[in-house]
Length: 123
Image (cartoon, rainbow, N blue to C red; front, side, top):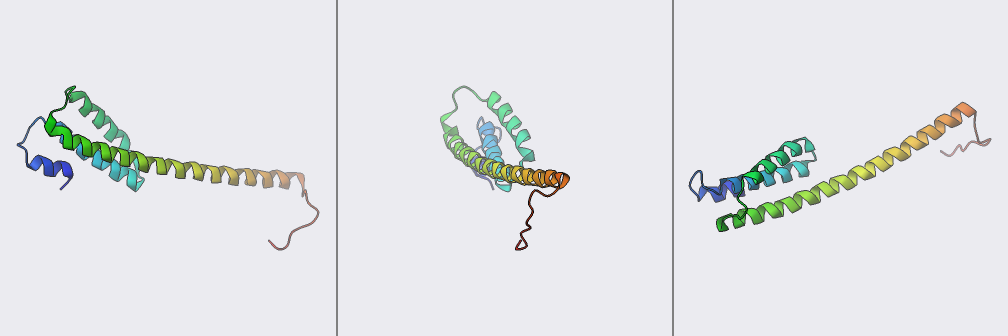
C-alpha cells in the first residue's frame, strides 16, 4: 500500500485530504516513472498534478502537512532522477555528434582521395 493509501486508510472516505493523498500518489508514480527512464507517462501525470493543485484551497489543512511534506520529498527525488537522465542524454548526444563528425570526415576523405600516403597497419 502506498504512503497515501496508508494515510487515507485512517481517514474516512471523501475527506478534504483526498486531493492531497492523490497528489502524494502522483508524486510516488512520477518518481517510479523517472527512475525507470520511461518518461512517456510524465506529461499526463504533470497535467493531473496541475488539475489537483487547482482544486486545493489557498491554505491547506494542518492534517495535510505530512502528505505535502512527503510529496515534496518525492518531488525532489524525481527532479534529481530527471537531472541524472538529462546528464546521460547530453553525454549520449555528445558521443553521437562526435561519431557523426568522424563519419563525415572519413566520407569527405574518401571522395577526395586519401589524405595520407602512409597507412597505419597497426589499427
